[in-house]
Image (cartoon, rainbow, N blue to C red; front, side, top):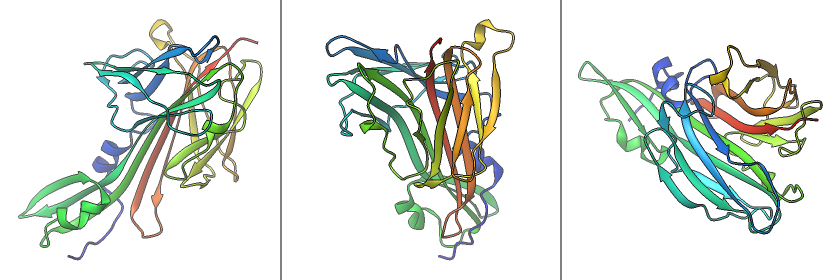
Length: 267
């Protein structure tokens, strides 16, 4: 089968990675980000909603959910449940330090014509060659990935859980994600497949918009080294989002998205 690879059509891209301007936003919101005491628990909500941190659209699927402990090893997630508008799960912080909670997904999408009709397919790269009929025409393919994260700490902050995977669009904290203060700038590094992502627009939005006529919302850009800075205008729970589109080494259209929830404390 001969597949002519082009930039994926807009409809296919939109299904895979929602841009920052789109109303629906994916998020993870922990019941607390900094905890104390012996082996505390944290409950996390996950949803895709119109209003940040208020579940009003659909629940987040938990298929790609993982939690990484202070030693860099996976930690068991407990009591996972998916409802109509939100998913929820618990995590026990048995070891002091920082934990990274992430929900990641990746796959391929294709659009092609067969018998005069436009067909679409979504799945994993290993199945792509057999999924599209040999007589298909106008084949367009894209590789898509999405990662949604948050961070929680028991006791003193640590960095063992903050290592990146080197796959897709990721954030590497320079300022610790559980040590954010409204009066201080925070620095982060954005990476695409493990390499600095330069000149990427990052959206920063303060949550709890349901009870505000207008919440602080602004954009910053990464530098040549992938680093960007955020000056938090006030305390609260913030949503930070970025996306990168381009082509990979094989010429396949690549669409990657990242979003994270951070709690910013008063000074």
